[in-house]
Image (tube, rainbow, N blue to C red):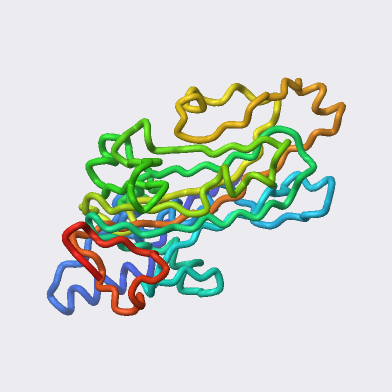
Length: 304
């Protein structure tokens, strides 16, 4: 039986590199392996820079009964990304790639900016609740995944923002430094959806820059989602009774078997997000036209 032996051929590129190095009188660079090789290829873009890490599916057949990927509503989160004092849904500079590309929205310490939540109901043929959720998390730009090892490491490596219900800072919704204030929900029952959306879900919120981002730009992500909570889902968190947001009353107790029998449908979650960077001083506002739309609130000791 003939036995074959492996033939080892030295790569031509490596040979040329060594020859050139010897002619120039310099030492060739050592090859990079393992984690160092991965780090050398890492450009700083993480999996969290686009909200697609939340769900990979973007399209849907809105009017198809059998489409399991239907959204219950269209969702859009916008801010004055180009800092001209106008939040326009038709201005490309106020959305799209600018929201997901560092530095994202730049805030000075003590400065507030308005973020608009645009929610367009698609479906009314459902049971249960429609839940709009706001949540924040830090992004580790030293890792491709964007994840930190723990919350302590995240808080030490990222800036600090707060999200308020109004510009006067009366009702605090989110605080990145408070583990109990990193997410908030607004829920409405199918009995009144979509008629009470303007009353239950805030049309806009105000994001405040509190502490400078120490390591990275675009190191904080504000994510908004709208999802369908099935009537037979597990009981919502205790925060429902805290008064921090509105919860639908009279929950329906429908088993999974009854849901299948009755043809009650579930819907895919819609989502959007904006990256934030906090720096010491606000960006000069040269084009906000007197801030007539109230898109910005300067720090206490400054004016536009």
